[in-house]
Image (cartoon, rainbow over all chains, first blue to last red; front, side):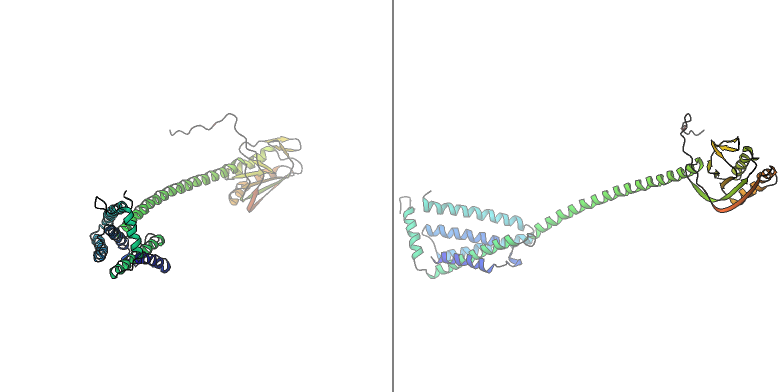
Length: 110
Length: 251
């Protein structure tokens, strides 16, 4: 319940405040969002499987975001930021899809 | 729980319903906070992506690629500009050459027009007036005057309103002289364009035209020099019937 409320509050806040992403964060925010989405889907799956743990979720969420941002940062420093970003999106996308498939199986048995 | 160890969908949905109604614990508050932040970030990023012009949000490498593309395009366009400038210079040079040729052709046409009598002429010269009340001056005297003036360098001649050219003929008729078929009555007025002093002295030499006219009974000739006389009589251009321009051959 509180999660749904928080999501709604975030969306509304974003729409109302119309925030501008700082220039320094611009390369990292999309990747961080994708990493957080991965953590979110993983958390939902774990909860459906009955093994959800708050601490694990928070750590994986923050850790995913930090690692993804770090990789992009390193890639930018090494001159392969674009390719690394693509790689991260691909890997996280695959994970998100597999998590979504597991969630689907739990909810619909299909 | 089902036989394969997974909860049945029905119990799963029941669990979701219970969770939505359940009072949150402290751990769930942190998870919810993170989800809210995530939603906020998603909206912010979507907003930024939608509103940014593209260049400001692009990363360094993309910018470098764009820059290289633009530089390549600029180089190509610069090369095109060079080519077109060369073409323009060529065309301008060609038109300048043709205009010079046109000017030269016009100049020659003017010169030939003065010689053939199709163009009016003006310049320094002399006017020879022959008064002949008794009709004693004949064509040969006037022909002598014309030849004398031509020898002295007269460039355009006019005899009493008739242009005198290379083929001009003077014929004695009763009561006057016919010039190219036009009958003239005295006094005769011969206008010549050339160096006035040379022309005047050519006419006035002892035993020359003026003396000859004076020796005819009752006739009298006067020569007037002028810095500007006009030869306004014109002659229609006749196309030669037989003669054709021959290709010039260097011997």
